[in-house]
Length: 246
View 1 (cartoon, rainbow, N blue to C red):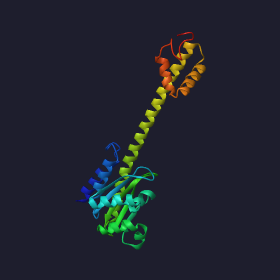
View 2: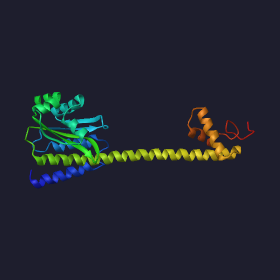
View 3: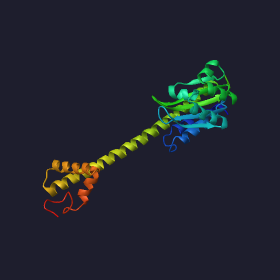
View 4: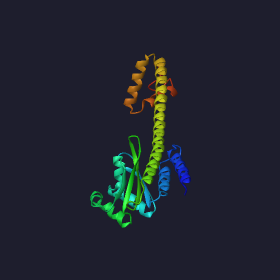
């Protein structure tokens, strides 16, 4: 692949991964991220760990049977470079898995990774500003991954983080909008019912509201249910009838 072809591929990948409209959930962009990274020279296998929240992983994707097993192993054991890059938000590059320090830090994971034939790992955070969304993991041979590939991998991780963060923000905004609309609709119904009851029973609006609230508490129902009962119910019978009715 020529340098120009490589640059065009990278630009296309960055644009796709940063697109907040790409896919309905995290799985699609995450899988494409891992797929792009497997094309980087020196990368033998790769995976992505995405977080459900600050403590729990929600998605572990590996490409190839070995990478899938190692990604899931890091989740099960709660140890490994991918897990640490997610928790700290800092990259770990060309980590020699056979080094005594690494074996002491991740004893079970390093044994499994070395048995799979990988002598090193690089873990890059998937983050957007202060939000740590997950991490990207490369499995390779020690000193086989050039600095340029690490930089490219981090750029791809940053791009998918932008898309995922905006998608989550959009979902939260929609949820808040629905909640506010529901609250507004409820308030409108309650205000209408207060006016109806006040006029029907010759009460003040405040007294009408107190009567509605007392009824809701006594019958363990929502105030909006009481309000709809007043608006849609008979004015001649029931607890909210005209004085002297039925």
